[in-house]
Every structure is written in C-alpha cells, then in structure tokens.
Image 1 (cartoon, rainbow, N blue to C red):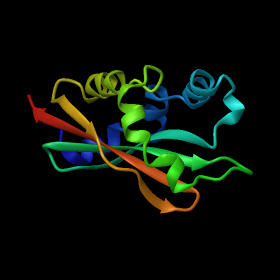
Image 2 (cartoon, rainbow, N blue to C red):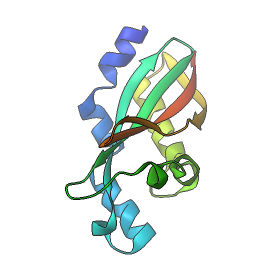
Image 3 (cartoon, rainbow, N blue to C red):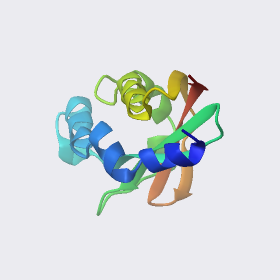
Image 4 (cartoon, rainbow, N blue to C red):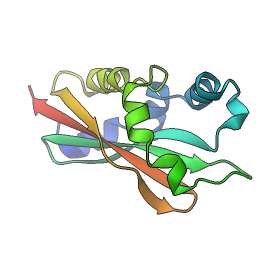
Length: 132
C-alpha cells in the first residue's frame, strides 16, 4: 500500500463511518447538556501522508447562526485529546484497521487549532505509521 493507496482508502465515506456526524451532537450533549449549544460540526478528514506520518484533521464547520471564534477553538486540542466521546485513541485504532496489514498506526498527537476561514477551523491529528 502506497501513500496514494492510503489516500484512496481514507475516503470521506470511510471516515464518516469512523467519526459519524452524530458524534458532534453526542459531544455537545456531554459537554453542555444540550447538543444545540454547539457552535460547530466536527468532521474527520484526510490531510496527507509521507510514509511515516499520517496526518488527519478534525474539521470544525461553523453551524448556521453561530460564531466559530478563535477563543472558542484554541483550547480544543487538549479537550479532544482526552474526551471519551471524541475518543481519538479509538479513531486511531479504527484507522489502523482500515489500513489493513500493510501499515500500523502508532503514537498520535493533536496539533494546534488552525483557522482556514472564519467558518472553518482544523485540528491536525499526527499519527506515526510504520510499514509492516
């Protein structure tokens, strides 16, 4: 499996099974007691792979009539890294299964929140991978 093949395996459809849209509402329900209090929707996306590091993203899409302010999202990597609903360890485990016997996912870390636009922020997930 090459890095092009990894990209072909990590499609938006396959990633939506790992991180379904409903997880955003579950997260806000756990955090605020009401899913409607959330200012964004979370989507798992593929960014890139160089053969030793797989970089995924948690994309934060601003919800209608909400504000995705920088001060709201800057502390999220620390929250997401340990929140049981977001479950990054489980996400990495499922990515590992999706990659099959060719690559193995190892340690992971979350990067800093990046602002792509005022209505789209991203949190990179850096995953060490090794070829089997």
